[in-house]
Image: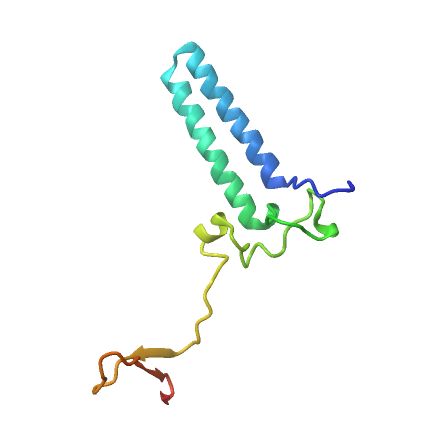
Length: 129
């Protein structure tokens, strides 16, 4: 194990490898002027983003920031990925990450004789508050 956390992850390496193949096919398509190679290279490059995202969501990517020393290895799976990483766009796109705390069963509605400017009365599922 290295002395420093360099941020290498399985998701990062696989995503980079797939993107490199896609860019190489794209470059070959440009050199030989082949529309099929251009489309194929572009498809593989887009697939690299999806592959990296899926691997990140399954725990093979790591959150940003400082991690504990036992999480530095590339082969260590991130167990906090299921809840989502804070400030991670990929986790938010998947419906994970930053959530607002809402009390279950609380309904907010205006009362019948509400005065303008006053807040609505909060009524819980069990009765009036």
